[in-house]
Length: 306
Image: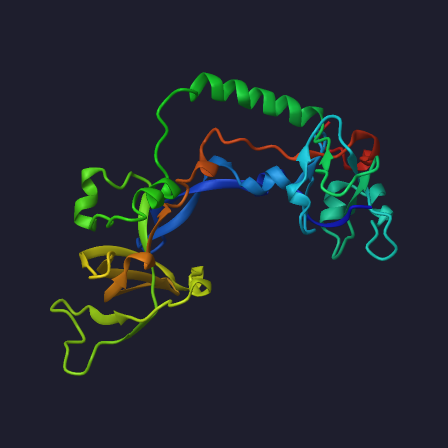
């Protein structure tokens, strides 16, 4: 056995749908953000790592480390099967119940395992067969890509912009309209702050609080915990071959926006991120298909889509 795979069960594939956020008035007429569930914009990328069957509305999201790195190959050296582990076993009693019954169980043990089908030597890559339906879907996706995208200009994303501005200053927000920063890419900053020095104004003329950048100071601290949306207001040389910025940070907490002006932000603490739903993985035509559970092991009672 290569790995035992406990799963999270989704009783309906449409739970993976993604929707645009639109602004509509609530009962009091106040603008409110809601999901437009009349038009799904696609499905979450998690579906590419889930196990499913074309005749069932079930999806099983694997919770086992590293199994998501196992690629497809028709001539595989491993296979997906029901777990026979002594303690992390699959509850075979679920096979006799319908999709609706299983998804309403207070608890269930739907557990798979990856089993080697031949000797696998150290350093060999592990493969499983994703199934004929997956292969067909991938072939259709490749044909679509060749027809619609191959050889055509590709819009720059955040990772491309990071490389371009690794050693040169980012444009200020008021300069971004020139097209230097492409649409769908937004500036962000890693920020820890301290109060301004004694005697210095603590607020701007419009009432915005002022702070001084105070970290992160170590690589390991550059995490999402300190990342916030920001506008670049001013920039200058730092005297050491790099750049320093004054920024306007924007942080949302409990539905309220908090804005602050922060000075002394080094170039290394400024970055760019893809705007929500603007990354390549959110393209309308992005590939989405679950890994197919072998037909010979899939329960008849779960085939509610026949």
